[in-house]
Length: 234
Image (cartoon, rainbow, N blue to C red; front, side):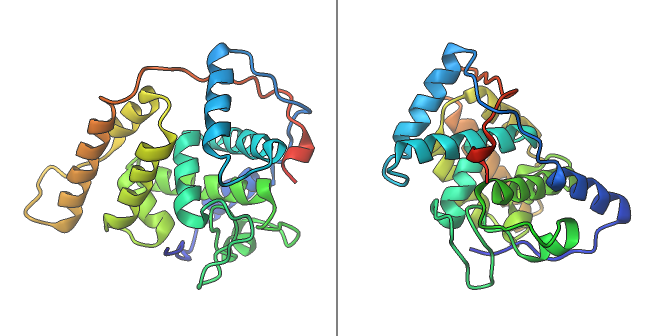
């Protein structure tokens, strides 16, 4: 896989991202307040069994994914798809360019928005950074998931990485059609294509997302995250 590319951030953007990664307050436990939430967790726990055999570890991992994804305004299943492509759920994965952990975060981000004690191999630290970075790229690209995923991978404008993430989502992590419908609506397809590869790739990506909406039922996920064990995340 590729990697995030170092970019000079404005002072205001840097401050916002610093606040985001440093806010580590989490409540003491988790409560599933909706039957759909139990169904979601049970479905994901089963799907992860081959990759994370220990049940307690799987639940802790999924709890962290859900918390950090929703905290950043991301779909948890999208984050699972990114983790699958980036590290195949290997906590201590290191890429050839030095990206680390589940979401393959580049170490320069610690210098830019973090503090020296932030260990990118820690579950929650890694997911906090990864989700924050993807949220930043989504904001930068005004909600265009195709381009934001390209930025996350350091391959802006190319279809390979967004397609890999989407295919992983489609094959392994589909649960709620509603979230994917929202993503499909946010993809920015250029008004004039003129044969440009970026336009063609964006249109193909939008069509792929449209296809998956035919395959899955409507469902809602509701978790009460006011209480989450700190031990889950560090």
